[in-house]
Image (cartoon, rainbow, N blue to C red; front, top):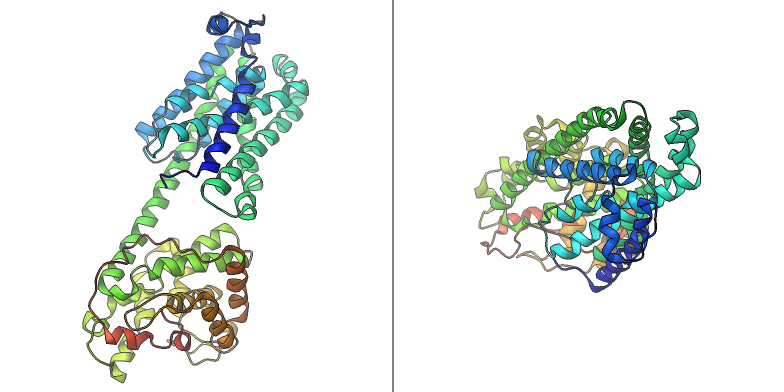
Length: 467
């Protein structure tokens, strides 16, 4: 999204002013406060340990970002100012330096980094403004608890408590600021923007905090900064594994997009339908309190629920006239075709059960196997509700979109016979809280020829739960 709302820009400006306040006492790093701004740079370049630590750590951070962008493109999230391998560098600065000096460490790497999305200036300012208060607050808490003295004395047991407190503050500030920008720029509901952000990032940051503490202690050891930099080697290996994981995940998403596009080309009437079903499935899963891994699986299930149409003859999907019973039986094989098509895609996991069983009904009159009640896998019961909801609220050539309230009323009427009442209730609650704002990347405006056969396959969406 290139456009940034005015309130989000104001928020970025306020955080940037906070960052400037954090950097204001920087001349004290050299030991003598200098109010004259013209002497600020000279104070930083004086050859004392703090100044050289700032220069070395800042250069290391900037070089790491450059390597991540050029040698491993796509491994550093575009919206994040900090990749996992760089947390120890910033935390080591917080453990070694006074707060204003520590806050300087991320600035060169963030401000000089390439920004691909527009407006680049605002986004670059936000990345810098987000880093500076987090590092400053961590250094401030660490120093207030006597952490710098214990690090200088290489007293590791005594250094653990101040370091742990600094990591907690660092994590909390990043989570707080990141949640705020999501609320204002992306219009994410506040409850969802902050929910779980702190707890999810705390465990990995604790490990990175230990690495940063090791760097800081070794920095003051007889072996000096060179030994401290060796700590980054195992962290670099871990980051490389992390980058490979994200590459693999990107490949998974590309596979799914290719399958969905193939279905959209073959059956133009469902263009965008798969993505909307995936979104509705995610809303239901979140309302049910599922963990993030299962939520992603349900999204995959919703997106790919109709992939079996690739195995249905195109002449049936586009037949000009009503379907015969034999032809309808062929079309009703698409869940089994979809299950077979995705058999070798191991990362889908239980999403494959939803692809196979999303047309089952609680009363046993569904297909392909006539499962009853709890025999139907939970992901399939989620996707069935999402599928029917989008079918009713989407405009097709053979039917006009129903209002959301009417569609939910129809789902409630069929709850207990066709749909799981628990899934219907979760969708109702989710829509009451967030509304229905489907995000579809497929081009739904592309002209298509009328397809009475496709209409016949979906006529009465709640009867069959089909999209």
